[in-house]
Amino acid sequence: MDHAVPEFETIALKRRDRVLTITLNRPDVMNAFDKMMHDELPEALVFARDDRASDVLVLTGSGKAFSAGGDLAHIADNAAHPEKFDHEIAMARRIVMTLLETEKPVICQLNGHAVGLGATIALLCDIVYAAERAKIGDPHVAIGLAAGDGGALVWPARVGLTRAKEFLLTGELLTAGEAASIGLINRTFAAEDLDAAVEALSAKLLSMPQIALRKTKALLNLETLRAADGILDVGLEWEKETVRSAEHRSAIEALLAKA
Image 1 (cartoon, rainbow, N blue to C red):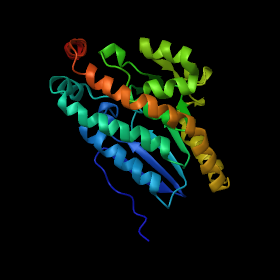
Image 2: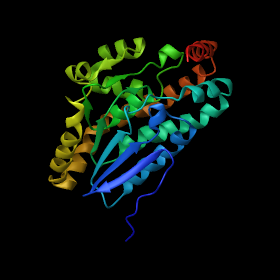
Image 3: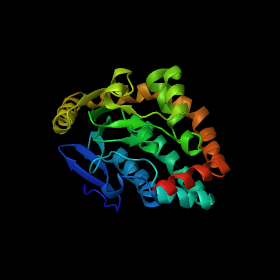
């Protein structure tokens, strides 16, 4: 049986001892999403979900960041040509639903900052171990967009509606320590200790009875999946609406002027 992993331009896959690591791999732009990464990540996640040679998945970023969210030049192009954004909304839906429907445990190795869609992807993982230097937040509103690509789904699931409203409406970035203290993520580690911590957690999960592990993880995700049925498609439509707004265009013009 062929257990080779596929190759992508913006995603790196590596399997070792039944652990499959999925690495966002645009380190020169802090692993920000362009069209190719939007297209490739759902394909990589589907492969990981169905991969018979792995039992634990690790999602991380290359370089100093996990993911800075959307690539600024790419966001500006979408603002000028919003019809292109509609395709990416469909890809965002695939990313969210594939992570929620994957029965294997997914560890987020939060090696650095996770912003916007990057934060959503991190928080859709089952267990988040972060480097102390990392920050996490979702500034969709600050750039004139509804937080429709999963933020309004996953933040309340992790920290409750009260805190989710504060952080999604203000776009505030939290330090890893602050995020751990409110239960948004699980634990923080010195950057040099993060690899070992994730390896130890992976080994522990691999030692568990696998059918029971997968079905318990799936059971824990049922409520979030139920919520996704009522929230996700509405949120994605509202993000498509706001990408066409003057507020969004003005926010992007201001960011480009500072760049």
